[in-house]
Image (cartoon, rainbow, N blue to C red; front, top):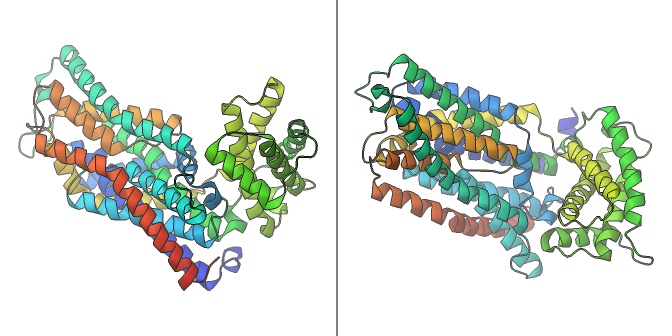
Length: 494
């Protein structure tokens, strides 16, 4: 009942449309990325297509359900700070729709051409485009709307992962040929006959690993966007984790009081920032660096607001719905600012540093959560997309990258490397492209085997990979500008 009470007709329509687009993004993601996971078992006739995609979908679901959420909120960290903390504003709606529409357009186009393009690059390009357009349209400064530090970390992982995939798969295949003297492993599929049972077991194992790793990493990107939608439209229910246990809540309240003492020591007499000035200062610092007295004054103000809202309460549910959105915004700004100050080694007293870092971790527990129904919905969307659109990508991976048909050892090597790389990235909270790692792994295994690669296919893949970021930056900026016009002038939102 609370759910419906919090919705107006307009916000209800926005919620339905935004969720359909978010799950549609994951559906299209299934065309690209999950199709890579099942490519080898389908192409080698290890599993029938329907069995393969259902099994892969189940493993994706398991990966999504056991994921930490670090990648989901890492993606959100790339977004303009002022739009994240005002996700329910007209500009916030425009941001979400721009991200989803531009990513879906590019993913559908590359899928239609049979090109395994990266959904990660697509989404990140759209985010950068929204950030650039937002800074240009709101303050006339080009480039300030992007968290370049976080973007740099993400882009490095996306650029390095294909090199890792190519090299590691090539080395793994060479090692297998030196250690495993079984000719059947290095043969291409013959007709529609399945491989020997032990090879089938190996390929099912690697398909399982890639599917699970994909769910634990790629599935989180859609979850992050869904949470932005829910937070913006239903902050009373989704802005904060209502299920935080009492002991964590009590500890958080005590830590907020301790942080007041620590931060007040860094604020010179006579320096004070309140209200929107404090928000603006922390947003500036998160985008542009250079902390000063005003930064600590703003941080102290925001932290005191958190402490005041927690004081006298025993759980998140005791905080009024009207205060939950504002509290989330305060927590977001304080958490991100403490994290950035810690990375810059601003805190000279180790006890203070440890206290604030522990405080930051508990703050994140309140805001960085994903309900199980969101995880199930994202996993279902991924699996459904794979079942419908797998064939184009499977044919490209199996037949068009190498000059010879993919053999069992090459497929297994590429998938072992892909699942390991994705799992490592998930551990560090970094998004990587399943498509890039696996396709590069196939190319590396083909090269190591002396099979050679089809230059035309590889050239088309590289063109698609190179164009994805700039094209999606343009699409993201264009759709965001159009979205702003619609929400302000047509729907009359602020």
